[in-house]
Length: 257
Image (tube, rainbow, N blue to C red):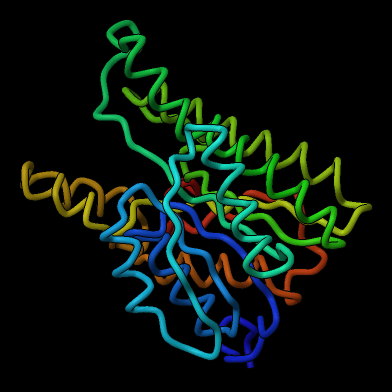
């Protein structure tokens, strides 16, 4: 049986998922709990995070903790809470992020750039730094960062987002090299366009958006959050024990074109 679907594959493992209130983060918490892990589901959105905890079912468990990944002290407190609650930190999925509405580079404002980079790149750095410190104390672990398909290619009008996601992959590779001999694996998952509440909201405002995005994916549809969650579960499980420093692209063929 695949580690992704084995209800005891992650028994005894404990970790953190950020951006857990909806979409990929929620699906990942559900998948990890189904595989036997104990998960601290973290997000700025307390109501959404608590709903994720209610929806997660399996041989593992979950609980909610608030976090703003753009605030160093909040991230440090989150990791300390996880270690206090579980006695260790075996894995982390750094998934929290924001999106950019889009504009040509010369029209990008400082505010747009700074907010996007603060959450999508610096927030991942804060999380990795604190989590890896805890994992060194625990004797090892697995970190998975959410990058993007546009972390490996460009996309017009998305300078801040593309730059941040390329940066996430760079941090992932460096950390993988820094800690490979210390029992810590670091990888990134790179989703294509995924069916999430955020995408549904954008599609409702622009009826032409969905067919345009679907046409860009050779598989002929958008991805689903559980498809990304399954990749994360594999990356934190022993089934991927020889995989580190890799951007795992799950994008329906988008970047293969």
